[in-house]
Amino acid sequence: MDRAKLDVDSLLKIVLVLIVVWLVLEIVGGVLGLLGWLLGPLQPILGIVLVVLIVLWLLDRL
Image (cartoon, rainbow, N blue to C red):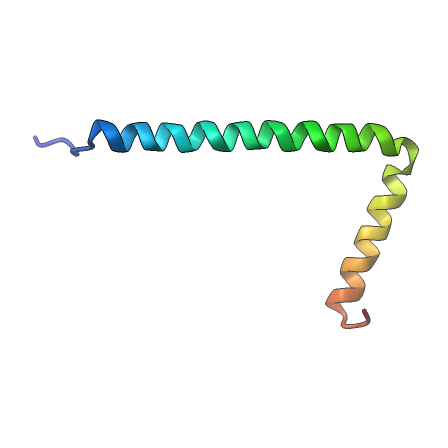
């Protein structure tokens, strides 16, 4: 039975891309966490405003 052939270089590139994606997600999570801490009690109001804006945009009212 012949197994799929994957070069070591290709495998290393895949692993490198996954690590970069993971690091970007960690950075974005940290920034959003800091932003959430700064906004504090305004988070629900900001969420409602975003939902209203999206609905208005979808209904072509914006």
